[in-house]
Image 1: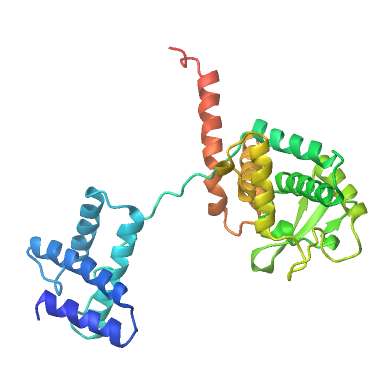
Image 2 (image 1 turned 90 degrees about the vertical axis):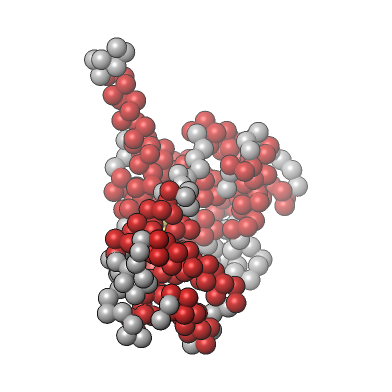
Length: 302
């Protein structure tokens, strides 16, 4: 059976048995046709292509400038095709079985400088203490408390806005947080955040949430917090494109590491199940080590 017939049979199966959409089928067709052309250029057939051929094809995609994510998507199509050939008894082996998928370098998180965070916090505190209408005053006070807590704890925004009042423990020195997978962790708060929370709680009506709202969830939404934060950034003269709640979480982690905190401690505070997730912040440590060598190496100025 020719390569074209094999590809057609696979696409028919994807359509009939798996209900793949027309645009998905067309994407598979393009990827498989490209792969078949490369295999033919190596004087091989789709039924005889080896693992080395598959890896050479991936190398060729990289040479062409294809991104790792696009190459991984194409490889996924080729994997499914070879599984189909094996399932139909047309091949006894799958040359893609132990081929590693191309991995994209994770983009470094956006991080504000310590000075920029201080500017946001200072303005938020000033606005919280500036007399205005009751509604605006409450919104300003809420935003200030949210910012102090976020930068002090590094909580995920969803964890922060949905905090229960009962989560504030030991006179607001610690909070208990239920994170991903319903796993609880205890996170300390600094003096500024603790004082802000104490004052905020004293103004609240009875209710379960630390940041109550009239919506269906009963607590402040992430969208409202993000909107208010961007408004504050604009008033502070910081580009709103660089500021969002998760950016404060990144700043918390990066500034801690820059100050000498242990990576495992930061992992625990952020609620990361795997330290590899926390390691995205090690660019901070890399920079710190470079500066250390530059400053103290005897031949650094030579």
